[in-house]
Amino acid sequence: MVHIKKRVAILDNELINAFKCQDSATVHEAMGQRGAMNSSIKPIDRGMRVCGPALTVTCHSADNIMLIKAINMAKRGDVIVANMGQIQNSGPFGEVLANECIAKGVAGLILTSSVRDSRQIINLGFPVFCANLCVCGTAKATLGTINHVISCGDVIVRPGDLIIGDDDGVVVIPVEECSDVLDKAKARTQKEKTVMERLRRGESLFDIYGYQSLLDKLGCVEER
Image 1 (cartoon, rainbow, N blue to C red):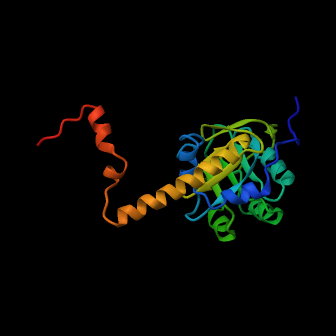
Image 2 (cartoon, helix red, strand yellow):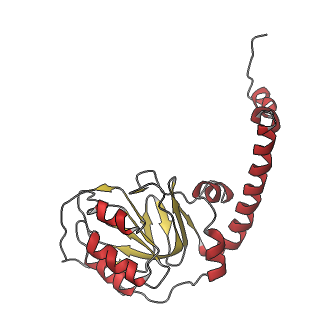
Image 3 (tube, rainbow, N blue to C red):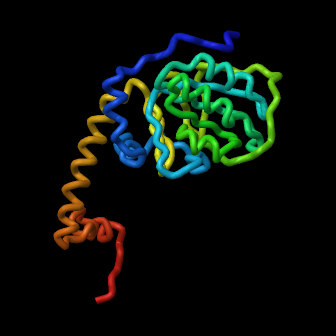
């Protein structure tokens, strides 16, 4: 078995940059309500945003040797996405590794376990999305994988897939769908701007979208 792969799909930088102004919720809707990691994966501080191609990692529970190797391999702009096993009460990432990530230009970190040194990471301004905070240390004794297909936050993530994260959560966009999803996200953003202008003029969302016909189809009976 090859534990560490190096050949991955490469996204165009212009496409990545175009997604940086898109919100996770908009992208999720543009994808047909797909791609959202579960709500356990949260930013450690409000205002954190991340956008970039996934460098995927699988680690044994409470072991961070493969995460350290992945950071060593990471290229500028990568988002490290790590399945850290079943134990959340461990802190495999902290201030020391955050400094290395910043020096390398890593765009952010998504992981299924906890992190520690949260105050220091926040002060450094490095975007981290995780399940919790925990001071407990980790071992360096068991092999995992790098740049294999993984599951993170109940979503399949392949090396090179585009990751978008903000205050609302994290969304994974399959690399081959990125162009189409971007077009749909832009269209949705423009449509919502138009709707909000109408709402500010006093119209109702219920009427704009014709939701009365939906209630009628559902058999809703309204007192008169």
